[in-house]
Image (tube, rainbow, N blue to C red):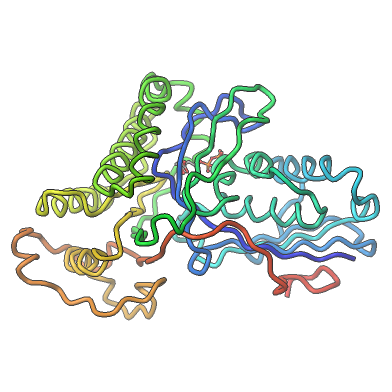
Length: 382
Ligand code: DP6
């Protein structure tokens, strides 16, 4: 019997992945770049038990039993086992039980597949003792998952080969390079069902000319500028490129036919607030980026977090019903609203409750392992 448990991080792209050139191998049409977030506040956790006593393979996700036959799960499993072939003939013959969960509410609509597949593949690699590159295996689960295999700032190289061998993630700089960087996730209240990233980007590839222009003409140059701004810790330019890339990604979504609409009025109003705030200081102090949903991810330096949060709280008052954990994550000292700042920004207050909650986090490390398992030694979720 063998049991392993891993924890893996979420990542938030500042240069977006959107569009595949190969659906099965999940090969992208452009490079992308993200920061890996601290697992203390948001992570996936996966336990895998392999035992000669198990009668069948089992998979639980967030407390619910799911099919073991999903194509992406099977692709990851097959590839890890292929690479482990000569190493563990015994363990490879045993059935496995997989139990996985996220430590943040999935109802929030935050992308969880990146952390989930990075975690699954890290745990499988540990179970079967495979060493070396695994970001290309995580990629088979979900494209963005390959970036969660490393900590800090991570680039996913699209690669050139049709087998996908060179479509891997690489760390650009470790988290310690820019320790002042913080991330605020503004979870927007929204009930509308959105197209999944997978189906949305497929439709963009089929119908959007702008997407091709973006991957050919924009991303290569912008990627170099982005990396330079991160290496130089040049927040102003980093923020500009991040916001431009998010806007262009959503422009290609609207250029898709029928369009993929991910941002809502609250998302647009957050982006407007960020520009207003930056203009007041005549430099970028906050950068927004939006994925395939209405939630805003804001990159901001530690020194500006308290002040900007006080502005957010003024414009978007928290829900009136007492919510103990409206602001979670890294602790903050005091958040006093500065009246003169509110006045100079000339802000209007919204009704309470447009934001569900806010997570305050930072850039962190890649997957780790722990002995705190989610399964009993009989393969039953604890
Ligand atoms: C908008 O990785 O979820 O978050 O590869 O089909 O699983 P699949 O898609 P997924 O797409 C993420 C898209 C994005 C941008 C990004 O993270 O780069």
